[in-house]
Length: 429
Picture 1 (cartoon, helix red, strand yellow):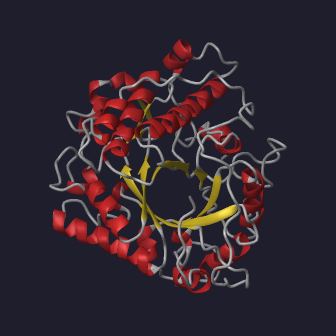
Picture 2 (picture 1 turned 60 degrees about the horizontal axis):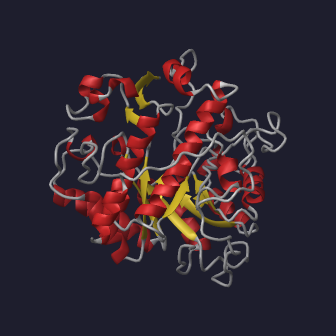
């Protein structure tokens, strides 16, 4: 049996769900990683602070496809035009001496590859389910690797649509065949994370891409349970009544649902394509210290543990994932969420865990209208990297997003490259 045939067959193999784990109990437990993290290699070209930049560090950029944010520039362009635009993003990454692209390949329960589980993405052709005439993910992997770039495949597990009308989905869409899987909330449609059948389905749909293509990593962002919407309730009563009996609260049950998704996905990746890594990029605040003494000195309105039911700290401390990229999308000195305090907090969390720590950077804010004056200063982002270089636990940065790398209205990315990326660096392994 070929490796690909073996991998595809393995998708149907059962995964044993972990037992319910009380909050915090996972800390220190073994996880899916492959050995402890070594300190970042130093000795490269000096950064703006005079501290040598790492010769092994992640230098990443997200390429968002949802709503055609970064790519393709609009739906309905020809296959040749879409491919040309994609390669332009890859070439720009090479010119800026980046080494990793994080491509969104499942933005809304759809696919940017010929998936047997879900329809082609509407962001390619303008019509969900219509074949674009080429294989974007397969092309991206081949072209990225040809340029010495890693390709991390970015999936959104539960988001179905940015509207609430199932009739607008492709006729073949699983959400139309299984309306009992779907929750309408905040003007959007989501798969219900509380249903084991949903969790098994989204895992199979995502791992299909891992089986088909030699992606370097599977990547999730911050969408687990949806961000809270005032005055609205995420209706999972029936699922909780059926599956939540072992838990003292609905919140604990919801966190366990997301924990299971993370652990089962990690196990599936190891089974389907050993060596492919698994990383998550969450909202940057786990819990405020006023909520939990282990939390950060922040006053953020959202806490991933309580609002998104994502125990991001537990995943790192338990080494359930290979890397984490907290979205530290605040400036140094922010009154509610200070970048400086948060990077120190995350460095302490990652210390000794074996989980690599990279930092998500808000390039999209640099020079943008409506942002505070600090974001109009092209040096702000460079200051972030200078500060991060003081923490050996920080092994790189990822920039949101590719359209902003290309436009760079304030020159912030150019400043980062000049100050910190004077020579090449390989991604950490």
